[in-house]
Amino acid sequence: MMKLWEKKSGHIDSSEIHTQFGEHYDVIVVGLGTAGSFAAMQAARKGLRVLAIERLNGMGGTGTLGGVAGYYYGTRGGIYEQIDEQVTKYQKQDDFLPFKGMHSELKSWVLDTEIASAGAEVHYLSYVIGVYMQDRTVTGLRWVSPAGIHQSSARIVIDCSGNAEVCEMAGCAFQLGRSIDGQPQPFSNVVFKLYENQRVGNFYTDSGYIDITNPEDVTSTILESNRLPTHLKEQYTEQSMLLKTNQLLGVRETRTIVGEAQVTLKDYLDDRLTTEPAFYAYSNLDNHGKDIAFESDTQQQWLVAASLWGLNFSVPIPAGTLIPKGYDGLLAAGRSLSVDHDIAACVRQKRDMQKSGETAANLAYLAISDSVRLSEIPYKKLQALQLETGCLSLDSSIELRDTTPQEHTSQASNSQLKWLTDIEAIRTALSTDKPGIAIWSVRRLGAAYDSLLPSLIEWIQTGQEELLRKNSAIALGMLGHAASLPILREMVVNRDLYVPRSSRKYNQPHVFTAIYLLGTMKDQEVMPELLTILDDASFIDTTAVDNKNQEFIFDTDELYFQFFSFSFIAALRIADAYEVWKIPVADTIERRLKDPHTKLSVTLKNSSQDVTATVRKEMKGKIEQIFKQHIKQWDSVSSI
Image (cartoon, rainbow, N blue to C red; front, side, top):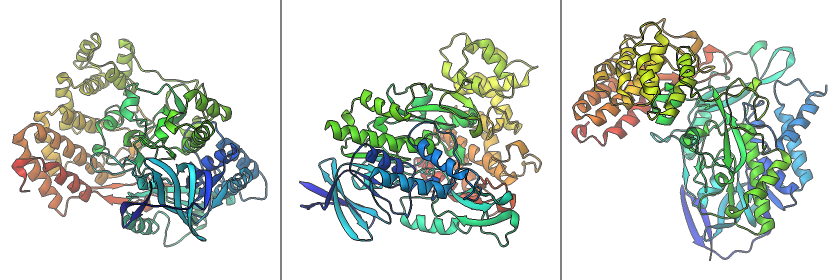
């Protein structure tokens, strides 16, 4: 018996139904954004009958209606490059106003032209209201257009809604945000303005956090972000002339499905990689959040202990990440791929999301032409289709680089970093202001590397090479070795704000690295220092903000938030292990959160470089939420 699954008043309900489908399609693509535009185009080019449904009034998503005119990393190759080449060709003509980056209006026009030529049936201002299913196989959709309600059947439905909306109605499992509080990445507003020589260009500012699953929060957040001083000013000049605020928010992270395969940061860093990639993603771990102390241990080991925010890497993405686990007839492409929150910061760039749409179309084509389940498609057949357009390249070697987006021009690089295994090479790197690769190399080699531990212990005892001493202690702390404790405590006592240069930016000061590691090692001796930090901000030096690190730590208020948030998590961890600390920790945190003079806030990233328009977010509520949730397990302080 066929069932219709619908979302009513926030809940998913099903009902048995006998229906007459109005139209049958091979493929229905829901959402014509970054991924969906290319899913619909490629499916139609393969000769399939395609229905494409989009709730907005244009194609392209982030790169058109969202106003993100350039690319930040991602891998080359695939049908998206044909579109980009056409846009670039038109931009060189004198008929159009000069544009910094890829002209978003032209790209929208080229996409419309190409999808019409491919033969897809497109409906704008339309959205899905129900999913038809036979057992766990999707058979069609109930949807609304300006013409009314439609029932359309399909062999394959590709969910490119950006929020796994079809997958949600179908009952698929999904994940959202980080484990501690479910928070995703910050979102952005993108603004077009007039630059010198009458050139149109964009800038963005991170505007806050949005719960895309909560309609009330979505509306209030959009209203709030549209009025931010980063773009809505009292007065405009020729140097800051606003053209428009783009209608589509720059949402970086929403739901991710639980797929037949999942890519996680921990698996990637531990070399558990697929041998059957459908395509590759390429970027750094581009976490835009300032509250890194609340991220997973895997992220903090990478971003804080090793300070490797800017190191780029290639991630092989298997086809199973597009297939909801246990389902057939349904695919998800775009930022809803089956990846965990940690690695989603890498696997979300526009180039790679466009490739995911093309990949979904090729999977649909093979499933239909060979009459097989999506999960049973032979990899060699998919690989052949992906290679045809360059969506997959056999030269996509796993690489690690610390580059700017302008330096990255291809999937594989001639300048490839490798992890260190030679002890002398590790020693040399730990003696410099760029120790990140060496620190992570030690973590990879682990305590089982017999020759390494004695050397690290010897290096922390050196009195002449301060960087070698401290970096060796951090490396030992990554292994949980007790020999690191005295030096890590020393960094906390001294409030050591030395900032390494392992990454092009977002490097983390030694003191935060030390606090994080001491918390993971459940070190009781540092607890008095942590309580002092939590209880009083007077130790913050007004000259302590490092101008070279100002994008991450903007001012002294933000500096204290970093001290507080890292100490907060470390103190909770130590109190988890030792009953004696629970009441002192709980009392201190509760007192500080109730104190109206306690300032705990962060600024959000702003590409306009206008410091007068910086957006600041209060973090007391976030900390209180995490605190209350955490101490529920502490019986001795249950009355708090």
